[in-house]
Length: 391
Image (tube, rainbow, N blue to C red; front, side, top):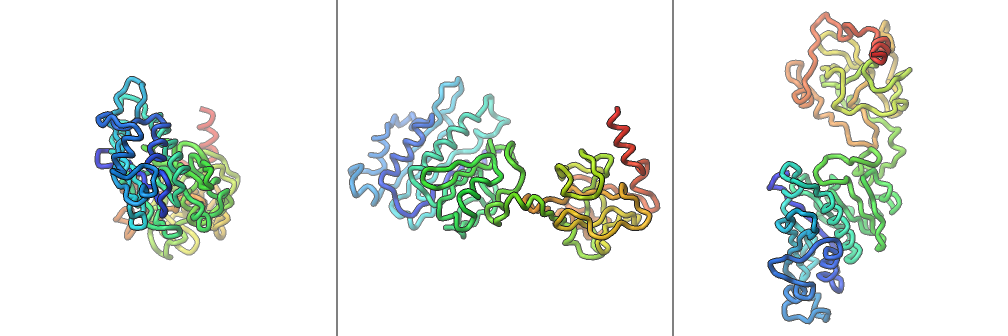
């Protein structure tokens, strides 16, 4: 995680609500947080400091309040949390000039599991609950909670020009978003760790359980960005993307492939729809330099058949070459359903057989000598599988 990362919350709205400072602070105070100990402030003291001479609750309240306050996670669990301060900034005097009139920030080092001597999950849950309470009270058109820097994950404008390419840890989509990302039920069905329906009509989308992992630990597989921003649904799990269809005829690329003997499932025919789960991209028998010729991929060094390209229905395109038995066709772990992350074709592309692809530099590449077979000692993979299952 490192000390260069920050936890950032942004609450985006155009019209200042009646009691924004009170609403935000109460959301924290009701979820295991306290105001900064060094200032010994209660809620009234914080409001008075931010509003200055203005009478809290008066009509002048919404005209000029700007300032900041600190809160910290306050749980008696035997560990010190007071140095994990959250700074809440209020810039309410001109909300139209600031896309996020309320921001929340905190150094991200407390999320780094390598420097913690205790579990921080309870604090993460309290933070998400407080953020939900803020969204209920403020009713923003969008709010996000993210680790920065971590890609472009902060809103740049109203929907559909939000500019978010990758969902942050938590996003609250206001009703304004539903015309562009699907109706409320579609958002609630996003393939993420959890979604929450808010009383305001908004939906909170939480991509994962913790802030220090890359992918959700629970929930359906798929790309929430595709589901929300490209209008895909669970039906698109049955529409397949073979990135090697982008490869020009005669061009080279690195294909991570797996033979029948080493796949984590059995198949009677080459049909990606019947595979229970495609293996992870990091799992493979070989990483092979292939050359495309028509609808087929061949090993670039010895000209041995590797596999056929696969269409959107998960079916190989064309027939097997003569004399090639069905069990001597590899499956590619680069192939994914349209519902999942885009296969990174740029990672597989090669300029020559002597220049490994980006993927091959990371994973290594099998170089098959001219005249030798990649099926050496594995010409009957079904028998190999049967033998290994008996051991």
